[in-house]
Image (cartoon, rainbow, N blue to C red; front, side, top):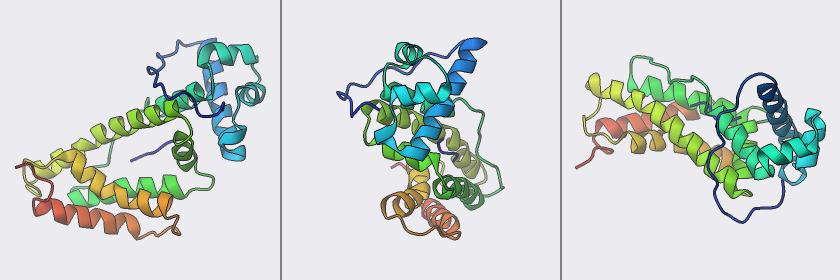
Length: 211
């Protein structure tokens, strides 16, 4: 699962997702600003991610950024919403364990690359309610796309037809976030496969099947 990749914490009010931007110069400005957000966040962290710093880095006037994104929460949310606008789909390897392993390897790479924009955005989501809501939208979209992995496994007869796709997918990917983000353990190339195998075995035994 590809993962992604200001002002002080806001008042906690979640806002709606920004509308799709038009093309032309507006799209170029958006791309420059979002690139600047990523670079500033990676190099200096959340505390130095300000509208003024992003505007200067992007080479646009600060009023343009304030008018379009309002604050750092809006900037972070748009970075995450932009990440969800791709055409990514999970690989079909021919087996549930293989599909989950391929998925986990992408997560592992995103979380262990240095610097990791995915890890930086996850950390920022704990400081901004708007970024947290955008991250939730991103994960919802990614897990929805990954339901194809479970559908294929059901058709192959690997797991029960009543398997809850979200529960299985969370069980398969959660160990990576727990080890690499929460515990901050060193990268382990074997972790993606181990987590995938455990989830696949549990799924084949009906652990994620609805009654």
